[in-house]
Every structure is written in C-alpha cells, then in structure tokens.
Image 1: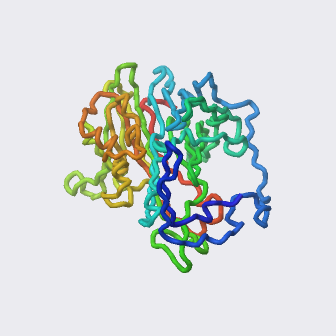
Image 2: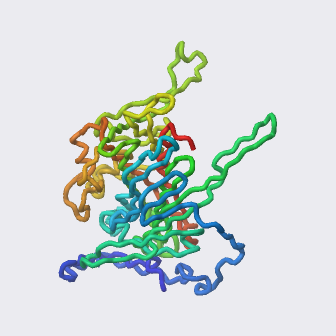
Amino acid sequence: MDNGYARPVEGIHIVVDMQNNVVTEFEDWKLIPLPPPDHLRNYTPGETRGGVDRSDVKPLIINQPEGPSFNVTGHFVEWQKWNFRIGFTPVEGLVIYSVAYNDGSLGRRPIAHRLSFVEMVVPYGDPNEPHCRKNAFDAGEYGLGKCAHSLKKDCDCLGCIKYFDAHFTNFNGGVEIIKNCICLHEEDHGILWKHQDWRTGLAEVRRSRRLTASFICTIANYEYGFYWHFYQDGKIEAEIKLTGILSMGALMPGESRKYGTTIATGLYAPIHQHFFVARMDMDVDCNPNEPHNQVVEVNVKVESAGPHNVHHNAFYAEEKLLKSELQAVRDCDPLSKRHWIVRNTRTVNRTRKLTGYKLMPGSNCKPMALPEAKFLRRAGFLKHNLWVTPYKSDEMFPGGDFPNQNPHIDEGLPTWVKKDRSLEETDIVLWYVFGLTHIPRLEDWPVMPPHGFFNCSPAIDVPPISSSV
C-alpha cells in the first residue's frame, strides 16, 4: 500500500522494446538515495497512518422523492427543453452529440453537433532528467476513455443517478466494458436569478438547477473529472476537476531545485502545466445539410476622445468577422472581454439580429516554454487559445491521429489552417485550448486533494438570442 510517487527511483533511464518485451537500454547516470519511508504519505484510511478520518461532518442528504426531472431513452436525454445524445470513445471518453434546445413555437433549435475533449498535454518545467521528458499527450497517447473507471454511488455522484456503461475495443481486438462509467444527474446550483423591488419590498428568486454528464479517468498520478453542465438559462459549461497525487522527484541530501518545491526530506514536486483542448462542432440554428454558420470576435473598446465621448467615459463592443482559418487563430484577452460568437447567417431574432451562441473563455494560460521546446513540435496547437476550421471528417484530433512519437513538426491543427479555408457560411468547428499552471506548495502534501479542484470553464454562453427561458 506504499505510495510509489513518495519514493521515486531517480537517475535511471530504461528503454524497452514493446514489440518483443525486451529491455534494450539501461542507464544509471546518477546515484540518488531513495527518500526515506513515511507512512503519512500513503493515501490509505486514517487508521493505517496512525490517525483517524474526519468524523465531524454531519450527513448531507440529496433527496428527490419524485425522481429526476430528466428522461433517458437509450442514449437520448431530455431535460428542461434540452435534448442531446450520450456517446463514448477510447480517446475522448464522454462525447455529447446532437445538442438542441426546444424553444416554444420555434421548435427544436440545434446548437452543436458534437462536443468533446480531444486532447490533453501535461508539460513539466524541470530541465533535468527524467522530468524534461514528461510531456504526455494524455488523450492521444493514453486515451481518456481507456483510462476511465467505474463511478461509485453517493461518492463520485450524488442524487438520482443514471449511469451509462462504456464499450470499446482493447489492444487485442476484444470488447472492454467499463460499468457505470458515465454519470448523469441533476444538481442544485444556487441562485439563478433574483430581484427585489426596493420601492415595494417585493422579491422574486429562482433556484438554479443544472444537468451534469460526467466521467473520471486516472492517468498515472492524476485523476481528471470531465463535466458538461446544462443550465436552465440556456448555458452550457465545460468543467474539468483535477485531483489525485503529485508526480515527484528525488533529491540529494541538502539539495533543492529551482524548478519545483521541496515537499519533504529528499523529495520535491516539479512545476508543470495542464492543457486541454475542447472540440466543438457547432450547428447553430442549422437545418440538415445547411451549415450557414460564421464566427465573430467581440472586443470591448474605449471610445476615442472627441464629440462622441465628451465625458471621456464611453466604451463599446466591437465585432469583427473571422473570414478564414488564419484570421481565426486567436488568443484570449480578458482585458478587452474578448469572446467569440458562432452565428447563423440566415436566421434572425425578434430584433432582426442574427442569432448566435457565444464562447466565453474562462481562466487560461499559455505554454511556459521557449518556441524550440521539444514538446511544442508535437503540440503546436498549444501556441494559441482558439482555432477555427470548417468541418472535415478526418480532422478530429489537434495533434493528428497518431501523436505518439510522431516525428513531424506541427502535425494537425497548425498544418490544417495553413490552407486558410473560408469560414463564411460553413460547418464551423471551434477548437478551444485552455490550461493552468501548477506551482506545488508545501501544503499540497499530504493533504488530499493535493491542489484542490480547478475550474477551467470555457462556458459556451448565451442561448440563441430569441430564446425565452
């Protein structure tokens, strides 16, 4: 039950021939003592570590006596005017298909054809061996779906739950089944809307209910929870929660590292980043075989001094049509409230404006590496936060279909967009790249989870504008 990550064997480099199951190289380049054993670093029940688990938290019961408000037929889900289909692949894990909103007399209004997380890259910032080699493509090399696991009732999910099993082929061509892999349930999400008339004292308030589809995968030391939230106000939010344990390195006695944090005697945690790519095949108000979508970027501008701004307080939202792929290679800019809208060029709302659905970036970061970094040869798509392409059936993964040991530079998105294809009145695919930088701190160890939950929320915001919810 020892936590292997707490006692890393440093200084050994091994090359294995996976076809013949033979060790071809063994290098022992530096003798570094094993960090001393410490049972407090094991992630086991409290009594096994000389203590007890917390007992001062009172029961919190989630009760739906009349059952859930959603209906499920096979893999088709209906809830609060929303409807979509649940899918699963070995690389992406959970896939949401055919997302639409029932808008009263306007009927079923499509929003997206396919939503999923298609890649995930975790580069480490320590230039020393072996940590400089840590830059795994957790989707393209491991497979988010392959690393998913069964969920536990009343722990991973609470409430009235509908589980979906996952089925896919394994390396031997057989069928692998993960029972209870996808969780579908409702959650209370605080206040959705409130207003009190200060003249009369009358107040109105509405609670927020959201529908969540999720799965969790374990990739080496980390656990990742992937969530798609559907809200009653027409919003969709993508959220990823990071937990698990740290990937550690061993130190010589008295040594410290600039590129990490000393956690305990002879033990340190390297600084690193996590990047995710959400692929969103949009379908805003489109009829079958009529992909009349375009992408507009919106930035808030301060009005220049002059007759239109005599009080020097004016600012406005400026829109720019992204006409081609190279124009649509963009980065986040929180200072200008930058966001993007996928619009239908043939459909208008009640004010005669084109209908659209907005991509709202959450917190984000860029790779903390020089342009020559080796991992960026395969992960060139990390250099920008937004890419937009017209749909093409063989363009599914931003690093190409086979990123594992791929010798080509900028395979995938960076190469595809060089064609500079038109984005006007076409089937739009958004590729949103977002991430976080993890600077381990001493308090990360041994408290669980090691660095809490991060909410990287590229909220696809604002329903088609004429919706009334």
